[in-house]
Image (cartoon, rainbow, N blue to C red):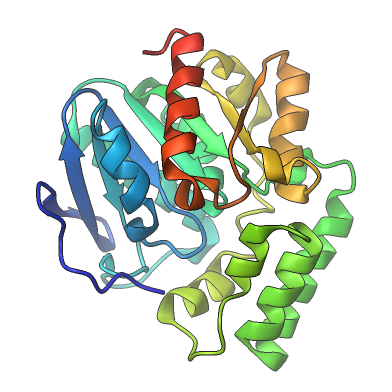
Amino acid sequence: MENTNKPIEGVTTGILKVSGAELYYETKGEGPLLLMIPGANGDHFIFTPIREILSKTFTVTTYDRRGFSGSKLIGEQDYTHRIDTDANDAASLIKHLTNEPAFVFSSSSGALVGLQLICLHPDLIKALIPHEPTAIKYLPNTEKWKATIQEIHDIYTKEGEGPAKEKFVNDLIPGTQDGELMKGGKGPETPNTKYWFEHEIRQYPSTDFETNKLEENKDKILFCVGRDSVNTMPAWPVTNLAKQFGTDVLYVPGGHLGYALHPAEFAKELLEGLQKRGKL
C-alpha cells in the first residue's frame, strides 16, 4: 500500500533530481545521517514509526526508491543494471545530505541495495545494517532458490498478486506473523507491487555481489536478523556471510518486518548493537 498520508510535523521533504528519476525523500531529527532503504514496496512510509524514535539520535532520511510511490521515473531506464542504479541513487542522497560517511539501515530488497551500495561506494558508509537481504549467492543451494523465485514470478504472471505472494511467504518466511501480513488483502494490485514483480523479485536476489568488497568493509557492516526469522531463508545469507567473515550477527525483535511491527524494541536493540560495535 502506497503512502497517502500528509507529511508529519517536524519532517522536511525534498526532491533530488538524479539521472533518470526524481527521488522523493523526508528528513527528521538531528545528528549523523541515517539513510533508511525500504524493501519490496519501495515506499518510505513503512519506516515512519521507527523514524520517530531514531530521529532522537540521528538525522533520519527515508525515501521512495525510484519507480515507487513519489519517486518518478524520467525517460528510458537501464533495467539490466537496475540494482547499481538503486545503489547509486542512495549514494546521491548521502552526498546531497551530508559531507560525512553515513549510517545506512536497509531491509529485504532494500538490504540487497545496501550491500551493493557498500560494494560501489564504501567511503560513503560509516555503518551499514543490512536486515535480512535475500542474497541467494550466499546460500548453498543457489540454483534451487533461483528456480523458486522464478516460479513465484511465473505464478504472478499467470494468476496474479495474491497467489504469488502466498507462494513467496510459504517458501521464504513460512509460519511467521510478518509473512501473514505480507500476503495482504484481496484489494486491487498496487503500482508498487507490479513494479517489484516486474523488475526486482528475480533480479535483485540473483545479484552477483563482490564478496571481496564486502569482506574488505566487514568492520562497517552489522548483519541483522530478526529473532522470529532465524529458521527462514532471509536470515541465512547474512548468517553465512558473518560466519565467513568472522563477524557477529545482531539479532533484533520480530521477523522480516520487525522494524515496523516492533519499532520501539527494534530501535533500542539496533542502537545498542551500534554502540557495542563502537559506531555510536
